[in-house]
Length: 455
Image 1: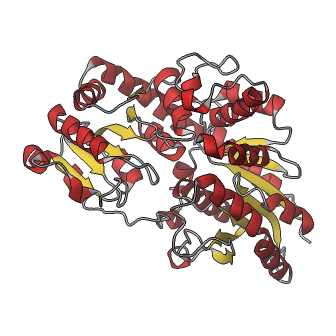
Image 2 (image 1 turned 30 degrees about the vertical axis):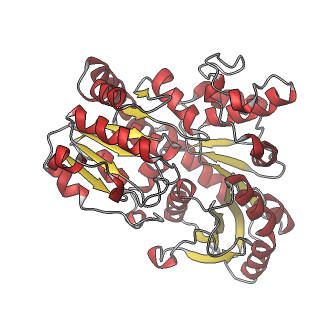
Image 3 (image 1 turned 180 degrees about the vertical axis):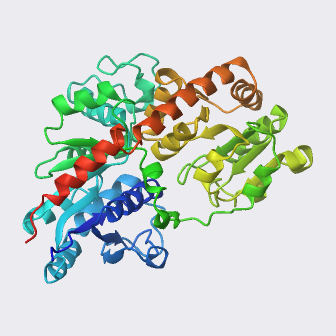
């Protein structure tokens, strides 16, 4: 009897990376692979939620109680520096089993895994959880910096388009804070410099970013690229994929509230797992939502409002003003919310997962990016795919009210909704089992991994 191939899967320990990686792991498990999840102590997963996987822990060297004072780049650099030794120990232990690992599949930010795979004579595959456009913009930042053509980091709001990047303005570049630029360049160089990996899995679709993927394949990446997306939709056909990988407790109370709302009437507001608001921004959002007259479902994450606890810091008179037309929760089951017939718009930070989830349901977006790849995604949503509007600069309640009404009830919104439904249809086509582009790429990926030799 042929030994079952075991894959070691290494997610980056942030919500926007954990979700797609565990969804990918479920897809691969469904295709006959045994899965071991190697995860850090930081933002540790709960194995009891995923009995279909085996779990090992990696010593990350981070303080157990609090890394909130650390910048993101420092956390990622520390993880890559510290986790290699414990992954090697786990790989050695797995080597003594009958179902030894044949491949390490790792998040692009966990680039230390390539060296570990090489040491143990197994293959490695990179999983990219951002858009192809984001890859190009990050690489362009390094090139512009090298050529001394990058504007000062504190003057990065230029409306001029970046010559090498159609659609992207200088203000859309995912620049770090000035103090973090050296760390940023280290991470980007490491995550996009592939030395020994056998393939790249990309959570995007070849028809959604055709020029971007072609440019990457031609100039940056000479190994096979498998665009397989939306990962969450492919994984949803597996019954085991229903287990939540959320680091926050989802509040299902919003679903019966949605059931009572008219079709396409609700604007869903969620700014992701990392974005922070000031009290002033919260109040401008609150009164803009109230004055729009649209029913709204608003996620206010605990700790997401500087200096307060979130929901408890609403402006005086707000609850009385909105009454039952608003529902506020600390975290929501987002995929179910976006698929609900009552939801007609999504005010989002435009993380790549949220973008794909919204595109998959044909929901137009109100974009409010905060950092990193979110600005690139927002630009593509509003100016390339034209399924949303971007709310830029300072939040002001009258402008908030105006753009909500544009998305929800005016002609602009109707046209965005039509384009969004076209995108949704193309996504459904890409998932067709026999000839969908993502389905075919998944089959080719499975065949490739199956070809990896068992030691």
